[in-house]
Image 1 (cartoon, helix red, strand yellow):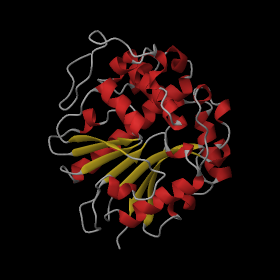
Image 2: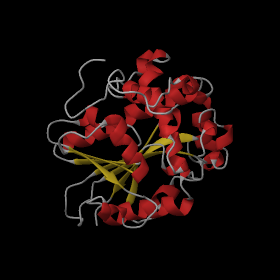
Image 3: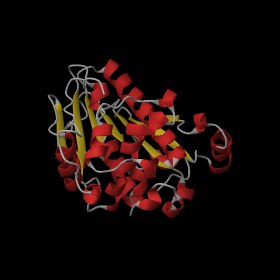
Image 4: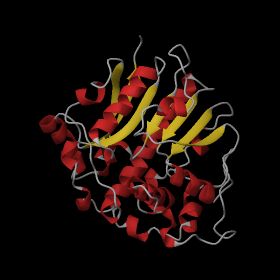
Length: 294
């Protein structure tokens, strides 16, 4: 690996003994899935060189977990999807920071991802937030955050997460960028609705909330997923119609729906358009919500 970008403090796998193989399994079932994107970012370019994201920390983090990534690389479809969605999340956050160079980016359910390596422009602030056990693991694996980068404990399923993260108390503040990667689909529908409603109610106008989701047909079928079936997580939520994403609050606007898997080729080049036509929503996509004016 080359030198880490500003604000990154990767731990070398040669300087620290790997943690026990089970160390990454947190107390919450959703947290079990954090190895999957880590392995994709660390090793996925061996399968898809053109999709490489050049993650400066993922390989060392995976090694410290005592995971060689071989189990996850067997699921080529998911590896491609993770690399693809990483690029979309990164592009959206970078576009936001072009408009607001000193803005705040918040990763809800961050796991062991490290987006600030791509977003640190010398002015922006980054908050990585997750459940307490995940944040503790993150500190152990990735070390302390650098300047303008903080780690916060949060449970999105509890009302009031906006204030607990210290986000703008009033709608007159500058817009913020929120992202949640591989998280909402594992939460109960009522919890997702509550999260979206809190964003809609509290976010300053122009704020963005980007997240990925499978459609409703995937709910309850985690054991059929080549990677997720190796975890305790279950897919619990997915939109039936696009309006499901904006229904929780009148200020919510669906700004864009971003393709993730269509570039993989067959069968996704057919499944994507077909699912939009037959189901009203993509089978899997990344959604970009915005908070409207008051």
